[in-house]
Image 1 (cartoon, rainbow, N blue to C red):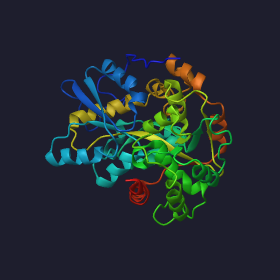
Image 2: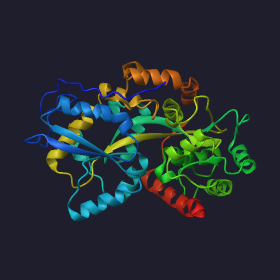
Image 3: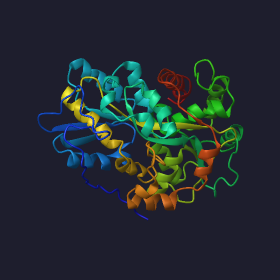
Amino acid sequence: MQFTRRRFMGTTAAAAGMSLFGGKAFAALAKPASPVTITVADVAGNLALTQAAMERYTAARPEMASRIAFTKAPAPELPGKLRAQQAAGRVDIDLVLTGTDALSAGLDQGIWTDLSPYKADLPNLESIYIPQAFKMQAMAKEHGVVVSYYPSGPLIEYMPDRVPTPPKTAEELLAWTKANKNKFVYARPANSGPGRTFLMGLPYLLKDSDPRDPEKGWDKTWAYLEELGQNIEYYASGTTQTMREFGEGTRDIVITTTGWDINPRVLGTVPAEAEVGTLAGFHWVTDAHYMVVPKGVSEEKLAVLLDLMNFMLTPESQAYAYDQGYFYPGPAVKDVPLSMAPEESRAAIEEFGRPQYEEWIANNPLETPLAADKLVAAFRIWDERIGAKKG
């Protein structure tokens, strides 16, 4: 079945210059004298969840924004690019859609705007977010706003005809890779949601001494990854590459998440009959996407961006986050059932979703990702100790 993403242009009754939540006027920032163009950079694949809703904004608020331009970039490259722009005093990106990877790197490097002075211009996040999304909000340290959420993984995905007896534990997965050289793959964690979820989930699977401290508490994890790496041909640069090879039959088991299981099967990249599983001791490592503003963005644009953030947190905008299962379920705010999503989203998830996800989400612990500094450290250690061994 073929699905195409709807670009629906809607309207809103929000008054000019007012927040969409509570009718609050901007306290410190005046709306622009004339509509502005906003440039949005996506380093997380988030536009699949938000572009349709963002395109509604220019129709709903023509006095604020005349156009939104969208660009994409790899997460590891963006912080350096923004630092260079900020040093030159010419920032040409107004809003970044990021996962925890570039969020953490940007916090570490001090490139994101502190939004704490503008809390009055944003909704009460604790009151509108689902509880686990609000926990993810803490990772932004008031330098960003969660726009989408999912329980993530790590899960294993396999082809049942090629893997009739899938691994049930981390030890069985290691043994399977030894017996089936180069048939397992995952992507570099610094540029892959499933890759970093696998990295952060292993300490729970292996019962490491401190799952939240990659430098002092991951002895079992780093040893496991080194041994696992002996059976891996190379580490993919991104998740899309792993799914393509899995779908083509080059690999028989890949690391996945709820969204990376559903969406590639919707798109036909991965056969519909692919199956997923958990490993004994499984903990979900949750994930989210964030809206962050680089330092150096003008005040008049910041006023528009705050209003856009409000718009993106309405239930109507959040319903687009179901997409085609890419970040399943996707909405970060409460009371956004699948029935609110566009028809093609409902059809995709009804056909390719998995009934067991509801049970797995309810019956397994949900852990937040590592704090920003710890995540940056984990990426560095993986690159030096694991990734470097494959060139």
